Amino acid sequence: MVKMEKSLMVNTEEILQVHPQITVKVFHMITVCQDGPNLANITSNVEMTDYILESFMGESLRMIESDGGSKYEMYQRYRDMIRNLGILSSYGVDDLNELVDNAAVGSIPAALIDELENDFRTMQENKFKVNA
Image 1 (spheres, rainbow, N blue to C red):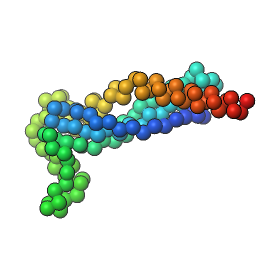
Image 2: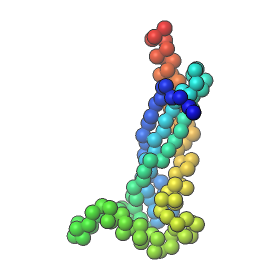
Image 3: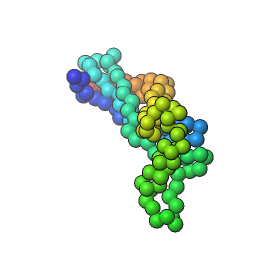
Image 4: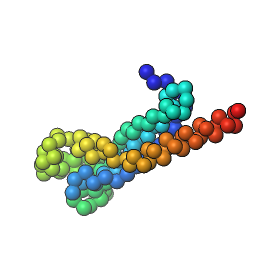
């Protein structure tokens, strides 16, 4: 079990095109932590926390006021259209969540992770200098 005494958590979002007709806004949480006694033991973890359907077939997802529907109902309507058109099965997935999960893996650039790890290391080094 990793004991995290010091950590840095960063929330980030990005727009991903998961299909030529489907764009989503994906939210990630990046955690950088020191998992050992010294700064050589810095690790990071990227986790997708949520996503929002941003556009479908070139149109932004929006609630049609005249329908009196909620945002959730509109989201369900778009999900049903995506499923009924067979878009998901053409990618070998059963669910929009799975399509987004597959697209989100590795979408955060390694350079960003490296930068966060270096920032964390610098913060910890500066903290040690002040306390010394």
